[in-house]
Image 1 (cartoon, rainbow, N blue to C red):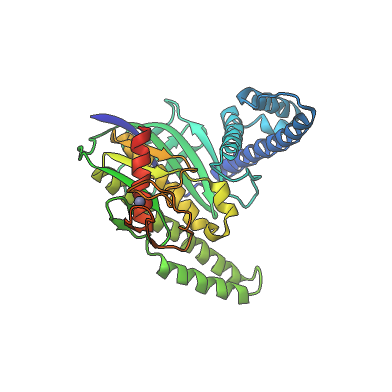
Image 2: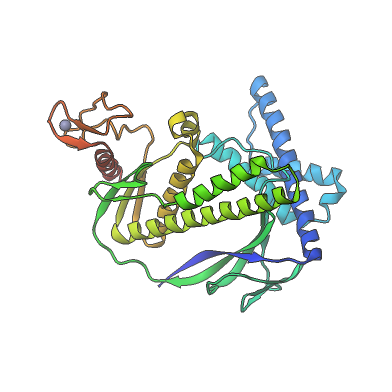
Length: 367
Ligand SMILES: [Zn+2]
């Protein structure tokens, strides 16, 4: 039996006093994040110009925090762990940006999703869907699932004026999926979300119904007087629909990731360069990018949990243009070519299945 950690996201309805405490933390968190970002960006530019070598490490940002604490009394009433977390998040985003995993870090605005993290101690208790946090009081957790494991940390989140608590629980026992001895390469697409080297494919979640509802309410909104009562009603409805859409997509991606890890012992996928994808107009629709990145992450996590092999091949590998039979590179395979015949060995290829096969072969080579 293997032990894992798990996250549970539960809706909460905090009281006035709790909201006040949360908001104070949000303000301090955003302040440290945004100030550190400003200072970092200024010094980064200056040091680049002057050629001064600086390591932008935890220590670098901790020193900034120490300075901010000296200068700002309002930060002193907030748990220091929360403030340390703020620059950790900034440092992660900076590193992700530098390695091409995400976009340039943005400032935290008042309208952004707000969140902060708390480490749990023995004073915090979780019992029968009621969570007691020593510094904040009791919360009734609204979630259908049974919450298992030992409480480690909580994240308080405010999204579209709704409040959530995300619980991280550890020591949950799971049984691994049995071995199947099967290997697969996976190509990601738009019409088919997933195309596998054995020819199978999986369609993206069907969100057309909810999308048309969102469009309907957006049209309605454009005709309403800004900030009128009806306008605000429509905004609220839209928020609800956006959350619903996210949930449908998320559920679907979880299911797909589980099925793939159940079916295969060796899973090969591409690496994504989010920066490049955003530059490339054809794929600039953010939902595809987000789904792909999320799916890769979920498959990776699931594979690790179940002791299966997961390999990502480098972005530079020409998986689409290479003939999976004789390895000839065919530069005539442009973005619109769906099927092609290899000029050397005459194998007839479906563009995506051929790419998936190449992804698998390259991963086997790398393993
Ligand atoms: Zn060939």
